Length: 250
Ligand SMILES: C[S@@+](CC[C@H](N)C(=O)[O-])C[C@H]1O[C@@H](n2cnc3c(N)ncnc32)[C@H](O)[C@@H]1O
Image (cartoon, rainbow, N blue to C red; front, side, top):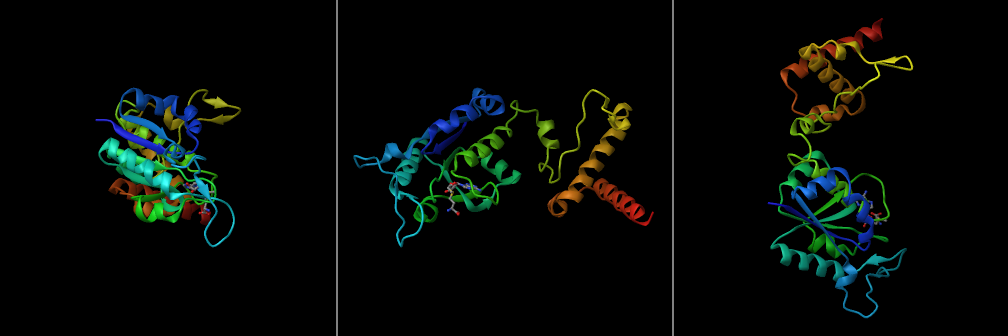
């Protein structure tokens, strides 16, 4: 069964390029996801097809009106028989790999893209099931965040990407991916770690796991607390700590 991803956006043209290449295209071709864009302007009732208005109480910018957004989402929910509506917003819960996995198991997602100064608060309060942010910065609209979600979801399906590859990627197991190298062995004097040429698969696996742990510890130590570390991971971390202590002392 396909996952329907319906996007509510004032700028459908923003999706033409991103939806039509690589992994996202493949996920659609294989029928895992079906993406459609709905323009709230098509759901306006007035002759000027007005989608924005001035904020009550004064203040800067224009606000996306509630009626066309409600009408769009209600139309889509009727069409699909259901629909988890997600309002893209810098004030939402942070997008994470585990949220992406949860979303990829739904039957129908509706991504609501805001624009201007934002969306009338009643959309968040009475229409959306969830508000999602792609990071602590402000973008001009929800189109790029919606594409981020669609791209991340596309990777979750078998045959789109090898499931073994996904299982080793950053965040999937709670930590970063291991470092990757390809030919040439010696590039401007920067050499590939010799263990990778040893042909010893056990050693290579240990090296990669240790490097992944090391990089996570250096850059995002909080991820280690939340990840499911194995006994082997704990031993490797112990080794890493001993190496750090030795370097500090010596
Ligand atoms: C200019 S922003 C509005 C920002 C809003 N005034 C605020 O400060 O929270 C316009 C729209 O872009 C989208 N957007 C901007 N940054 C985002 C982020 N980090 N994550 C998700 N959506 C974002 C939202 O849909 C938002 O309604």
